[in-house]
Image (tube, rainbow, N blue to C red; front, side, top):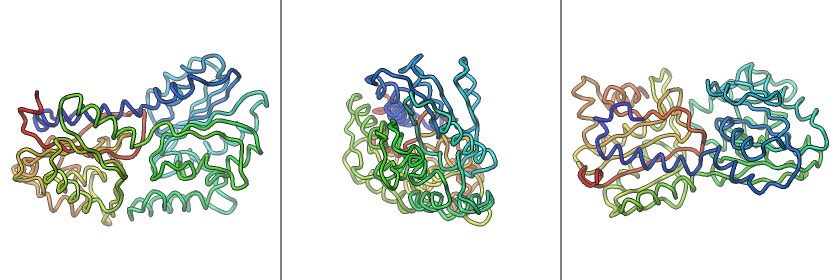
Amino acid sequence: MVESAAAAGTRGALLVELFRAGLERVDGRRCVRVALAAALPGRFAAVAIGKAALAMARGAQEALGDSLERLLVVCPDDPSAETLGGRPCVEIHRSAHPVPDERSLLAGARLLSWLEALPSAVTPLFLISGGASALVEAPIPGVTLDELVRVSRRGLAEGQDIAVLNAARAALSQIKGGRLAARLAGRSGLALFISDVPGDDPALIGSGLLGPAPGGDAIRRTIIASIDMAMDAVVEAARARGLSARRARTRFSGDVARLAVQFTHELALGEAQIRVWGGESTLRLPPAPGHGGRNQHLALTAARLLAGYPDLALLAAGTDGIDGPTTAAGAIVDGDTCGRIALLGLDCDESLQRADSGAALAAAGALLRTGPTGTNVADLVIGAKLPPRLAAA
């Protein structure tokens, strides 16, 4: 939902509708259920790890029924986790994100013992989504939790590219970088991934938690959801409404301020009524950051550039429903957003300098809140170029 529908207006409602179309295409529950519809008969034991673990686990339960004999789930804190129970084979571990803590180490130890105890007659099924890097860990001997925390916090504060940060995490782990797959010692298995990384490479998702073992393995890996699928769904939904739509052909990355300039420039000068970008920006935080996340920062930066363009609006949000250490997915802005913020006695430039975009956008009623989405394919940015009367048509 939009925190203030009045602030978003009809264009905002359209952008939310298109964003939801993208989320539905990459919903973890649906994607797992479809992927397992043609699963061969047999007995399965599944482990689901990541931000989308609960949704993916539900999809496996629905597809496999009684042939799913064991299910281990490692997920962030979520009250809906309780609805996954009902059978003694389900085991749920709530863990930490985006920085690991003691729960992450406990989850890692349980994952290893769970794998070691699997009967030979069952097929291991791995359901992996972004967020697994922090949620589960088993550090190599000599590496402490404090060191794991420092690596994660430094990478997040410096706005490190996700591939760089995950490589640093994998170097400290007994289970990342393909090491977990190596423990299966050639045993066959199936791994389904919701990708939040460039190139949709299983060696990078979750710091390579189920990436290929260095010496090879017998795991069949399939990407079942990605940012490209979400962008395609947004375009299809826009065209179904009779709107011209265009999506980026490559995933975006890099500095959030530079990207905000690029997106608003392309939206203003292009002919398409709807433009869609997907990827993940980076934001270097000041020593004492305020409240917000990279999508809120991108949206507020874009709002400054949209001032004076009455027909333009932009949504920037995380597909997991979480933007940084906040409860918002992102924000929706238009040419009036900065004016509304100024009328409330706040300064957009100062908010951006303090990395306090969330406070300014909340005051303007521009935050987008979705709650947990059941997926995680990085971020979506959707721009609209049309008068409000057309958005409502």
